[in-house]
Image 1 (cartoon, rainbow, N blue to C red):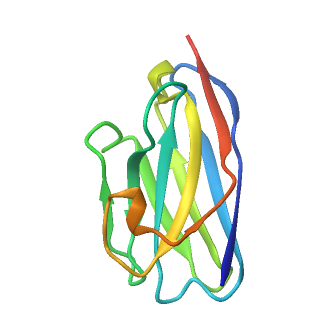
Image 2 (image 1 turned 45 degrees about the vertical axis):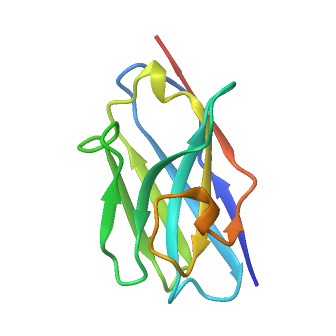
Length: 121
């Protein structure tokens, strides 16, 4: 069993930056792929980025070049560095862990409670 806790969300101005953290407790993150998803009010939860257990990454087109996912397996933490934030990035951000390489939320087994990111114009 893996428990995930996100932190680092907040209010930032258009063009600003935030770094989200996803800290795991229980089992180590080694061997798990970890993804970030986001959900705005009235919208479905959508894929943002994923880091495989070996460190390979994949991003949604909407964040490519602005967001960067990284992981520190020793610290059991995955990060999402978000630069050049836009108002349309406003959403609840969730990290998820699983053994399947996938961008679909249903493929992930473990979820954090989420952290809110609000970008003001």
